[in-house]
Amino acid sequence: MRDIFDAIQRSAIRIKDAIDVKDIGYSQLENSSGETQLQLDIQCDLIIQEEFAKVSSIHTIASEEKEKEMVLNENGKYFVAYDPLDGSSLVDVNLSVGSIYGIYEGEFGASHMVASCYVVHGPRVEMVFAENKTKLYLLQNGAFEFVKEIRLGAKGKLMAPGGTQQNWAPYHKKMIDGFFSEGYRLRYSGGMVPDLHQILLKGGGLFSYPGTSDKPEGKLRRLFEVFPFAFIYEKSGGGAIDGKVDLMTLGHSHIHDTAICFFGSDYEIDRVKEVYAKMHEQTKDKFELYLDEMIQKLQACQKRKLIKAVVFVSLTLGALLEMSM
Ligand code: AHM
Ligand code: MG
Image (tube, rainbow, N blue to C red; front, side, top):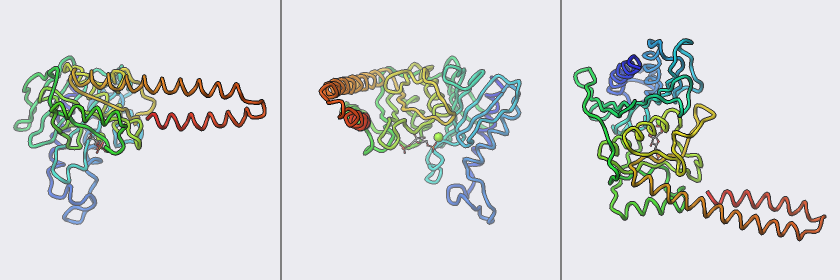
């Protein structure tokens, strides 16, 4: 694990230099000498790949920038999934960005995660690494120095609500509005690394990326974004759920799968659970009532009308499921 930690630190220093060049953010295609430049996120992906290739304990890597996993060492035991430069579009406007790493043993999957880490590139470069505890490090004169252990409070004051609001479900909007009317303050930059980092360091709050009408399974990727932060929040004394269950109990079928996600301190996570459980209950009740009605209709049907009724039921069930989102 130590060699992975070191490789992440070397990558962070190289990524800092890659971000800190004049042309980045103004032109993604050509630098001032007219040479073709690699897009910054691809450049960061290659930096990390190069540093991980030096680590013999890494078996396979998966990156947000790579379609498929890449085997590095057949004898390695760790599987590392990373997002090399999350929120890369924020570089253009000089807001903070970051890299996220999920370290899995034996294979990818939440239940195999043994450590996770992220690096924030803001006014300073900071790194948060969680294994048994969550620890904060600061880049000082070319080396990362331990600063402190991080613990979340039981209740926070900050709210980072992701996703396009017009595509939120009404119960989700009501819940977020409820937090604001309790005095929570909006803190959303559009970069999950700085947004979750702020909540973590300021003691608590809620970051959410719900299922929306355009992205029913959320936007954030399980292996590179959701599981690493879920691990960090849980190790820091907070919670991470998909509305119903602990995010760390979810599976995945593809390396780029996404998940609906909420990260926060206990108070906010409990509220999300309550609101989402109530919504699921109501949807279930509505669904059962509807099914009973349909069964009665079917029973009353003449044999020749049966096929027509079955088609009708399938179509309306589909519409009802869509409505309940
Ligand atoms: P990216 O991987 O394309 O950079 O997108 C991930 C980012 C997260 O950092 C952030 O929380 C989210 O996308 C913001 O999305 P939205 O603008 O839909 O709220
Ligand atoms: Mg990302």
